[in-house]
Image (tube, rainbow, N blue to C red):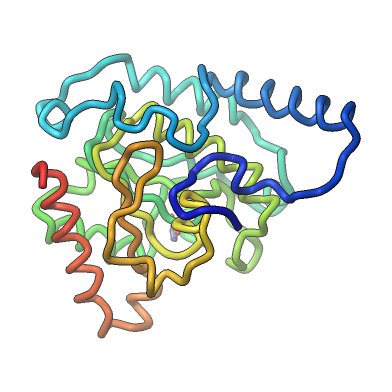
Length: 251
Ligand code: URA
């Protein structure tokens, strides 16, 4: 995988030799796909670093630039009854994500599990209950934050999503981030952190320090499902969340 501070699609491209016309065709298709999603520019390294982004104060005061609700609805419509990858074959529901369209804090998990697949909502199973408790401990309500996943369909038997499945779905969460424009992102677990940050550094080493995704501070931390299996590490995630709260205060 690519660089730690790069969050663009380039990080997920395999380096393969193509002839010129094939490169052109692939580029054309990729650009069409991003345009279909409503991107006005491509998510490449250093693009828009902080520029034009809301300050933490504006975000907390609820300043709204565009109708985020409408934009999220249009994005959901673009996803439609998605058949872009094999995960569509076994899913019951697409789990788009939920929360205020201009939430200051965004949590990004891996992908739906069984309960999420049934209900069509993110983090509603046991891991979700722990996440909801964590949010409450941070002094917020679940309804105050936006919760999404890297992939929007449940993998069979909850296996890890494969690289091509992540590549097919990543533009959607990227677009959600663009619309919501949160002040801080929390990546829950390695799949989320690796996909968004373009790194393969183990989550145990990544967590606890802010990285950047297109100018937005990103805190990688343990996935709540991991914490259910390893409750002794909960304090580490709590430590990470203190840093998130500080950052949201402008620290
Ligand atoms: N795990 C995730 O990563 N996402 C969910 O929505 C639920 C469990």
